[in-house]
Image 1 (tube, rainbow, N blue to C red):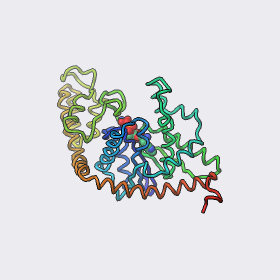
Image 2: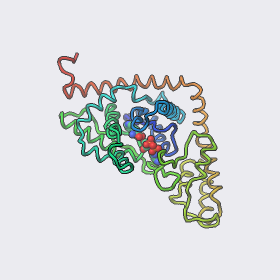
Image 3: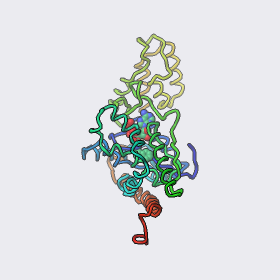
Image 4: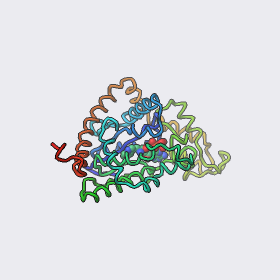
Length: 340
Ligand code: ADP
Ligand code: TRP
């Protein structure tokens, strides 16, 4: 993922009030690393959150929470353009156009829609915002003509749809207005397992380890994590591979020799789960210490975040408006009556 001088874009939906370590290692960390080698655009997908959040206070709280999380984790306004989706109206405007270059049948095959249909088994309970979500996402992406879109594995299908829409559009007008974006998905951490040891870590599944919650909350999340289900007592030899607690150690623990030593003792049945987890908790606290401190500072002075977003909206808006104009000219919405 080291592309020089290439534009990168990604977004995050504030569907919860704080990020978890799956979000961080799967998406945020690779995104922030790209700040040093590419031209990066990152945004808070507040309009996307409306698919699930219809409570004003919750939405306000989530947006602020995730914005502060990002900045605390290392979003650098000197290196990245950071903005809110709703501050750049071109996202919504391009979405209206793009819906015409994708077929209903393909939209019905989108995972977010299909999963929801399976869970609730009822089309009456799926709002059109959710159904259309991938079209808004395609607009988010194509406005900036990025080379790559760093996301977690679960977003791959949306990037593929975006490519299809771009291709359909380009073909219809014999143009190359939209370059096809590449999904940038890490093989190792594109899908961090949840504390249930079964499914991907996800806030809706309640199997997360947070980043900024109170120590007591984080400790509890770590202590209740699954380990090796076949190991009944600390003296039984345990399996390290695929064991969530060791996966998290690999991600978080800066003390590699401690991790190796714990693995050896675990395999030999010479360490209890509690000690492994306690060391994981300590590693978590070390890993995120400076981000946690920075977040506290940002909370007490929201002006910093406000300024970053205002500046980001201006810079993103400029680029997005150019693309929207290019699209309007290409399709005939700009003609001699409204084209100066
Ligand atoms: P959640 O599933 O908790 O609701 P989101 O869907 O809001 O998370 O995901 C935000 C970003 O984090 C996306 O780019 C997504 O691909 C990534 N992501 C979410 N969960 C994980 C995970 N368990 N492992 C890796 N990446 C993840
Ligand atoms: N759908 C993404 C998520 O749930 C967020 C998102 C919205 C996004 N628009 C985007 C990601 C455009 C990358 C590019 O996390």
